[in-house]
Length: 388
Image 1: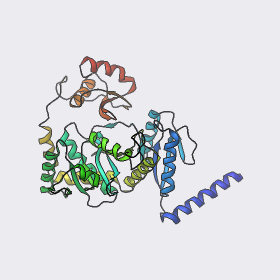
Image 2: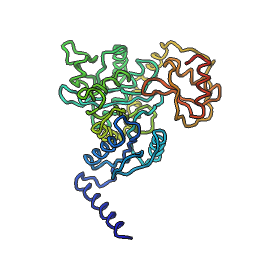
Image 3: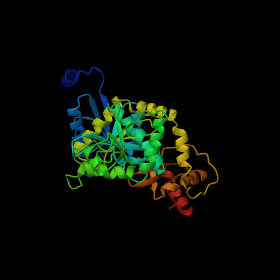
Image 4: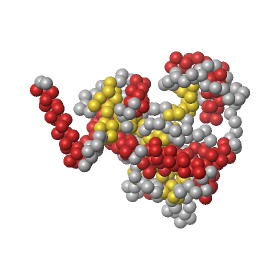
């Protein structure tokens, strides 16, 4: 062993000893990956946020995925966003990462993100459920799922009995009635009370600013706007300076922890998002989600979902009955522009043509997710069927 190798080994030993002394943690650190390609602020800004996160949280080991920066952090090379996402997913699935932070990631329908903000009135932490993705194609169903997702994330982050409020948007009263039915059925949900004089669990804008509930339930497009305002209101909008990002994607059977940040997110938000991702990993988010769904199903969840979905007006049907999917393949490309109410029918039309596809939600709306080699043919077919 040469002199440089010995010096490196000694430095690593002292680093581990310093970690033990500072954190009292004798176990391994939580490994959180961060993809750094695609930011409006450049790779150096994201690498700086990653370095801040590791410096401020010695129990976290940050892994940078990408290229174009020089950093002391562990680095996995990737030439573009697509390759970075592929590397990130592989590392999550083989458990060399516990969680990850990225931007411009397409979740399947049924998965939405739960963000965490610092409210300006009192500096209180509040979870926004949800901020990106689409939990369901029917609005009230989506808000009810967002509630469960929010509770799971809050519990993973250490809030044993989080309070829930519903933002005063379309569908709020229906969601309120449905949640009360679940509580009557035995689901232990804790409702917040509006700070306004007339009270109630439906929250006003004042409650949003004050952070009255631990979890504010909304639809993901509304939550996305709020997240941007909360994180960038002091900077003019082009630099997100405060908060924890758009949070982890959560779904009933989703099997990884991926937290989302924006292309406008600055180093402080990157650091916060990495901390949130690590908290979700340490708090066993996926187990918390399964536990919440197990509890809510005992309270009549499935019957409630059927009653809500039965009221949805069907989209245009080009396919009679259910079509079995073709062999599954990685769907790393996307086709935007399909109306959300026709999204599932569009996927069925592609399946009928032996093109594997999935429903998804991109940064700007619903998408049909396909393999790159199938995109041109799928696009042509969807135009022919008048989905586009």
